[in-house]
Length: 198
Image (cartoon, rainbow, N blue to C red; front, side):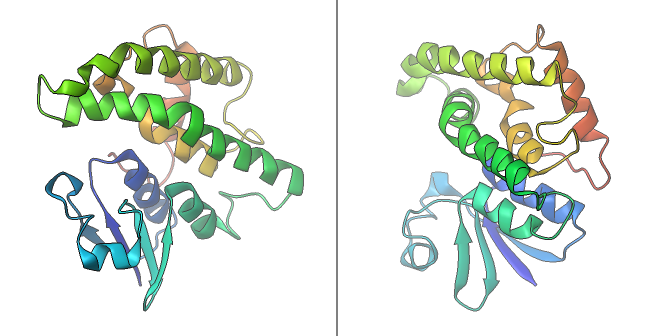
């Protein structure tokens, strides 16, 4: 049975949990509170020296880290990850883009505004995070105005990855009102079999 070490309020951890639920896999969830320093203990750092969640334990002392890498591992041989080389590369492109051009703005803004204590020192970062986040949302809106999903017009781990923080972007101060294609896409995600909320 898989073991997942994660923080329930984390979008990166939510990705892994959502796919496991949709695959109907049995797993153990181990709640880790990074705000209390639980990712910095010797036991945790032995699993992931970077001190980050999520971690997927696939066997004794055998761990996978990085949420999108975990998605690829879990989705192998399933409809959630195509075996067509070109389309697979497109999937990977969206996964890489999500971490570099999407998550780093939208997730961080959410962390500062929704998870850290009110009035924290990092609020000064919000204008720059919003600029980058809205740029990412514009790209998503443009793509989804022509496609129901991100790759092959079928639901895949590219959608799971991008949904994780897009659907709670408002918690980071992002206004999604004008993003009609994004909102329709989120409704399609939420109608998928096995869907569970964050």
